[in-house]
Length: 241
Image (cartoon, rainbow, N blue to C red; front, side):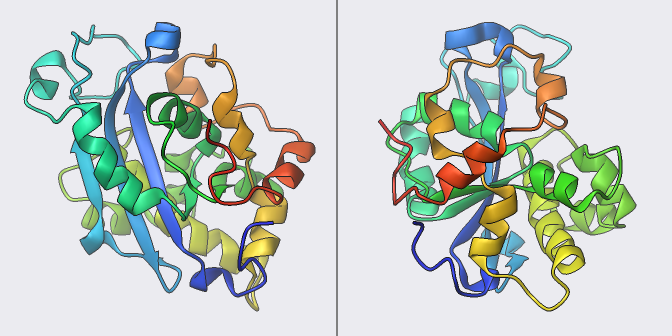
């Protein structure tokens, strides 16, 4: 079981994460183009300690409808390579619980490109929102608008926009405590969050996803309850090769 799950969730080592890729249509050649990580402090995002970077995939990036705005070959040309980015990612993610909106999509690509990255668990705010039955619309921007978080996201993610890594990561980091407050007014343990919102780390071993990227980033089919249960049994690095 993930260590320390019975303490208050705000004391857990959480980081929000989002990445933008070249698209599932690239299949095994799908590349990470941008990534952001925002740590939590006492259950709130620490935007001042955020890490975000473009990533040069080492090849041209065709302009496609699902490619996030601004992620062009020219914009990525001067960005660090995946190998240059990995040490900082490892420092920020290893031994932490990753929080993401439809985090299984991000985790599969992250694990494929950086198999040494070793979080201890995954929390999916999309699954959590569905558990709370807030609305039929559970896309990240729909939820931030509904919960009146969008102005705060825009203030903390200056220069970013929806469907870019920093904006989406900050939005997710603000969304999590808002959802927890709605579902557990007196507070929740990490174990309680994992019970309803965990994604199996073994999803990192899954084959490439086949859905269009702009659809799977924010509103995928619900994962099976069994996957959430298995995530509770993962130890540090349980999903890595």
